[in-house]
Image 1 (cartoon, helix red, strand yellow):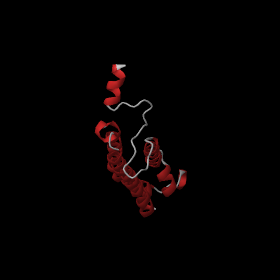
Image 2: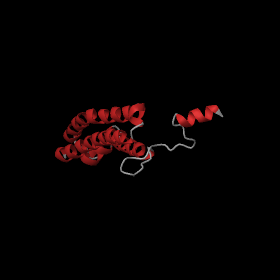
Image 3: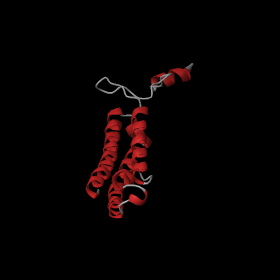
Image 4: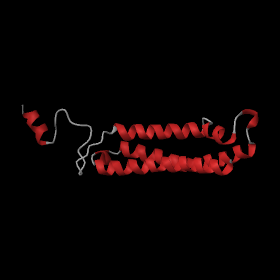
Length: 132
């Protein structure tokens, strides 16, 4: 019984929620940004290394424009630092106990990471339009 009282005093709550409530009253499950980052990473990976972007902008098979393919390869290289930064920022946010205890800080870090993915995708899109 004494151990239970000590846990209650230390802030232990049985059936604890995954995140604390945010200061503005909204509550966001950590699953939502995790899924968003996973989908953005999958889209970028398929667009760059899976060949989706090059096929979409430069054609496929014998109709492939080689100059366009070279230009799109440069676009991939330009987008890699943003994708890497997004990956590092998301990983750091999820592995940092300090950030996980503060939902607002976690949300800001994950928003920054998502912005990195959006910039990486934007580079591919705009460069694809230019090299086409």
